[in-house]
Image 1 (cartoon, one colour):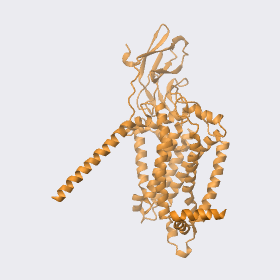
Image 2 (image 1 turned 90 degrees about the vertical axis):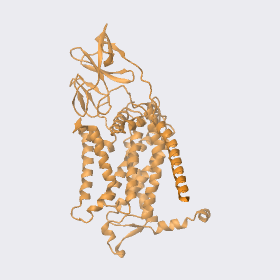
Image 3 (image 1 turned 60 degrees about the vertical axis):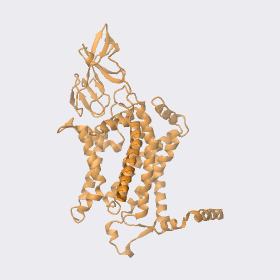
Length: 146
Length: 359
């Protein structure tokens, strides 16, 4: 009978201790996790005057909070991709000499369709839609592209 | 004067009984043999850690964390504050030498097999100190908010994100969000000046306590010598004085490096510019960085970076547990697998680091 009572008390104390630990750790761990910041709902942006954009060059533009690389190819056509390398999050650049998109961090190469062709990147870059309206470059999200 | 010192000592000794402690240190012997030089490496690392603490506190007086103030405050420190450039240069150089000497200390412990029973916990705590020192380096690197540090942090935290299952959570907690932003800078600042120093000091205390309690490790051939042939010196004052002399030499080398090769600040980080060419982490991460660079996009069915992270994690765990598996080879004197493993590891680190700077 005495042992039973002791065991009961042990379980009670043990459970209390676990509950106490949980009530300390849960807020701590939750605190470390930053609250999600609502994403600015940007669907398209204006990226300058098309005729003034140098041929065979690229530029990083702000698309909401994300960097996008806008490229004017030799044909005069524009392409835009997410500028975040699919390998390890660096920001890519346009290489005039290679006519490729290149990431300096780990020597990753993408062609002008955004497809990973050499180096470590595991996936293609996401493509953005580019429209020219009255000589103004409009870059829009892929899903918004019409 | 000496009377005052004597009286003060008496006063403290009456209350805290210091004499037995000093007697303990005086009776503690340090073996003298052809590998004795390696006994000093941990002490040098300790000395450099003290310099880190002192110069770090000085830097805190001017540093202002923040996307709009971090870079500017370091530039102000380096251009306007008297000797600001010197304090920062010493802090950066001594951080690098600190990690270098920890590596030397670790490999000398490895090759002299000083990690064997009863010193398993000294080895384990030392390894944790190495990881924390690398954490110091990684978190401190970002604080000036310059271009190189910004991209190195993006890459480094993204690599942490490659850990299966919990990677994403680790990445978000480290970055304070999805991307490397001012929130990341605040967190790294807290890690660098509060969290890591706190943990480091406690584990360093344990590490030193273990060493004091067990005394210096004696290599096998020294242990087997007859007692009268074992040459030793007292820990106090002989060993301590030699330590002090070496610390003075290291301090001179450090000041030479800090003055003649001052640490640069570079360009301010811009989250909307391409990663510059020649982006690289600090040298002690280079061999891992270079390995990731060589890995193809996919190995078998997993992504190259995930494979790399898993590979280094496994190697680190095997290395950490060396006191527990090494004994299996003890009987076999000819095979010497430990020596070969150690040399392969060092050659790998040196070769990949060199490639990282050449390519």
